[in-house]
Length: 138
Image (cartoon, rainbow, N blue to C red):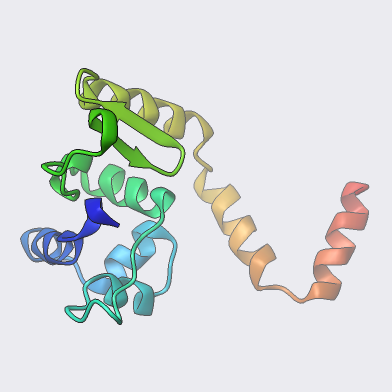
């Protein structure tokens, strides 16, 4: 997690500047509030880290460049930033890559109605889910 060593402090600064609560960030990232609190933990043994999806959600929804939340001064082997599923070399323009990623995320982003349906589906019982799948023919 070398790129997230100071993430807890940077997240706290972002929240303070934007007057956001841990609950606000949790809603943006689709996680529970306790998870966000663990991201800000000062004790490294108790600290959690966001996944790539949560990190990108946070960046997109707060309009914060990814490089403002990561420790990019540390160079990996070959001069690349390595995140699960992502790799950027020093010669790549990170802002261009993030813009392309943002456009792709906008293309596949759920509507409010779809999000509400998904939330309801996730909260329903196993039996109700089974019935929905049967209705869908799956």
